[in-house]
Amino acid sequence: MNGAQALIESLLQEHVDHIFGYAGATICPAVDALKEHPEIGYTLVRTEQNAGHMASGYARVSGKTGVCMVTSGPGATNLITGIATAYMDSIPLVAITGQVPSHLLGRDIFQEVDITGAVAPFSKHSYLVKNANDIPRIVKEAFHIASTGRPGPVLIDIPIDVQNQELKRFVYPEEVNIRGYKPSVKGNELQIKRVAEAISRSKQPVICAGGGVWLSHARDELVELAERNSIPVIKTMMGLSVLPTDHPLNMGMIGAHGNRCANKALAKADLLIMVGTRAADRAVVDPGEIQRRMATIHIDVDPAEIGKNMQAAIPLVGDVKVILRQLLERDITPPDSAAWREQLREYRTAELSRVFPRREGYVFPGTLLRRLGDKLRDDAAVCVDVGQNQIFACKYLPQKHGRLLTSGGLGTMGYALPAAIGVKVAQPDRQTIVICGDGSFQMAMNELAAIRCAGMDIKIVLFRNHVLGLVNQIQNAAPYHGPFGVSLDGSPDFEAIASAYGIPSMVLSDEDALDETLDRFLDSRGSCLLICEVHPDVGTND
Image 1 (cartoon, rainbow, N blue to C red):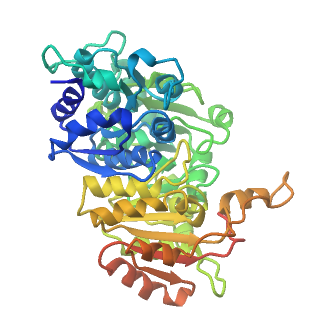
Image 2: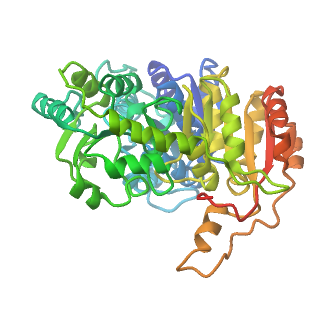
């Protein structure tokens, strides 16, 4: 067995069933070995960045570690954005890159790049394999590191000569023992007691749920804690869809682009319970003000996140699912907060029933998203891109019991379409929707080829306003002096582009035809593109 065969055998030992990749000279031995194992599926991406995004979408809905594999040089550097995107959103990923021969490293030969050094700031760990006999151990460690503690991407860089090197023998390790890497799981019992007492003493508590709730598979535990103690729940962008929109304790998304009700809840609470969130600037605009006004509890698996953006009165480090179970086993006196909840429900009802503005010849995104959400299946996966379409979807798309996937940390345009492909690979029967703008769509529309190749059923909603909407909106406000460099003049005929890939399309510019068009769109066989005409002046605060 050579190094390449050992790599594929190690992936089989980790129950890998799909790889997203793009072949090249220095990864050819691994691809040759992969060819002998049809039990591992393979998606050829059209640019390497999207291999990371597809693996991300796959990981987020399957609960497994996503795997992508590309060649050296530009293949590896193109993958960097996919790795950084996964790192910022804590997605478990193993990225495998080919590398030039070991004895030529550092000589700037054709397609050589120090990829382990390049990704060091935004990966959990990286390996440069120097001996084929180390491959089983390295793969075992990589999957362990990627999927435990705070999840994230791990890179394995394998020179071509190491892939071709013969092993003495193949032995896959049963256990992992990495010195210095022992993530906390169970919460400190004294801190658990303090949290329970703080909740019991509070009058207007609120839970802020972040992406860590999904990563630790703690949705049920969080909902149980909230319902048992009648605590309203606000979410960060990464925590969206933890609760259905119509749940009486769901107050919406916080932050600069969040829902009014959620921000009101955060402003008036006397206890903030942060669960699996780093309280970044988009969600918590003024951490100092919150610290001054209320006590905070911060529950997170990563001790580095506690106190990074906001000091916590009660820090609690450990696996969110385990900690919430510990709290549920405690006797907590539910706060007497009926008046508080009623006040918030009034805000929420007004928000959910607001009448959106109308403009002849155009569709308002909130109007479309509200109808779309009502028509989606209960467990639909919605992949949302970055820009105005992201803010509109997070504010206005009704959630049921499905998933909303987006690039929250890095804000990577072009994420949604490849992520949806990853979702569909993991769960072929799941209804999968893409929401994007005409800017972000053009960053990933070459992946329509991957959709066509696999015969996937992915419904794509494209908001066409002919500008980079969010940047245009920012440039129209002080201290800037008007839009520059945001016009999307020269964009292609999206209907013709879709048709070239064998995908039908529809155009919607009349809200009176909304229901009928959405029904045809969702009922259409296979993938379909719905182009919605949006006025370029429409902003996320309209």
